[in-house]
Length: 184
Image (cartoon, rainbow, N blue to C red; front, side, top):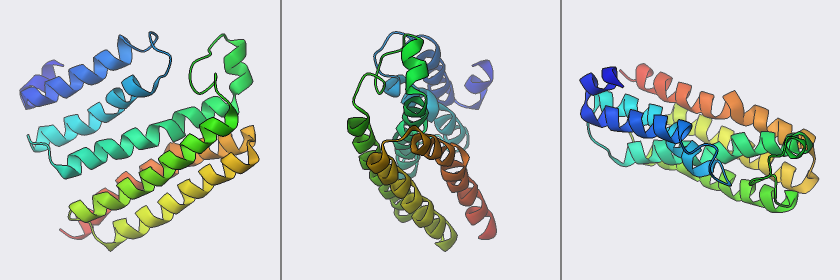
């Protein structure tokens, strides 16, 4: 937090919001999404604000991308190990809801996620490399969510989790860096 202050006061605010949401509110809610979203967006905001102390559409879409990605990543692993969570006494969303209901929400969020990734292309100075990767990975994410909705199997929930873990978000962020670097 001290180092964040030296970059810019807004970096400190983003760091503090992320840290507090990850520590304080984590066990006090019935759904891990709101505070997880804040904690997950904080590193991106900190990096952005350290370099450019203003928020614009690119920043907001990066945060939206992470926020829409988070349920696919977290809820899918919870669905794949649903019985373990229930045996451990954890019964908040998505564990306490019908598998089909949750998988429909995941499909809808995957479609919005793909659209947010494409929106990032339109509001930023990214090139064809990013557009191609965003289209391909977005379609794969939608397909994986659609497959989960139709199969309702813990195996497909695990596949969605594995795909969302690195390949999806990791490739998008890596492609952003490579795309910018290639055009310098």
